[in-house]
Image 1: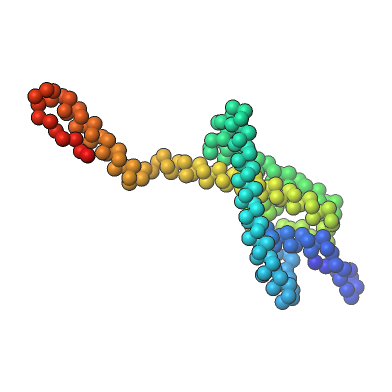
Image 2: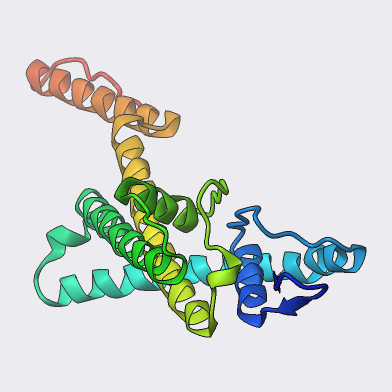
Amino acid sequence: ASIATGGGECVLNAPAAAWFWFTVQTTIGYGNMAPATSNGRIMVFTVGFLSILGFAGVLASAGYILSFLFDDFVDRHGMKMMSKPWCASILWGSTYYVWMLVIGSYTQSWKQDRLDITLDTRDAYWFAFISTTTVGLGDIFLEPEGITGRDVFAFPFLFLIGFMFLSAFLGKFAELIMHLLRHERKSFVDTLLEQRVRLKDTFANRKKCMGVGGTDVPAPE
């Protein structure tokens, strides 16, 4: 990325370039910056695609590990209720939404200090949402002229924590849905087995009622 200076040339802004690559790797892609040359597009198409695959694998593992560590912690301290899917979904979902408030507040300060722009709280929260969900609609973004080296570490750190919270929430929420489906919808095999048990109980009761000397009714195999 480069910054226009008002003269005949643009000054290279390495932090803004690093930030652009982070938005590519995480698939946020706000759309305010894009490669303008064929070589740049080829680089994004090849190296960027591989980075996306690597990041997706790391993120999925990070969310699983975070959830596993939390479940192990609550089990060790006798708080097994919190590891149940419904309770863990509420916990991780609430943590994720609170963390978006942190990102939004930090973005408001960044806009005000760097660019003297007042960002509404709702817009700041919206920016946090479209960033951590990697939607990146592009209506709100970080202006490259205000990005410095510190921002390349601060914003990715905030986003990555948000990614982990969201991943943990989605994992537990999916577990909750599967848990509900397993209880509400029985498989065909389970239904047949239950019917077989009921039939055996019925024949056994008939046999008991007939007593000694009665005609035995063969139970189903």
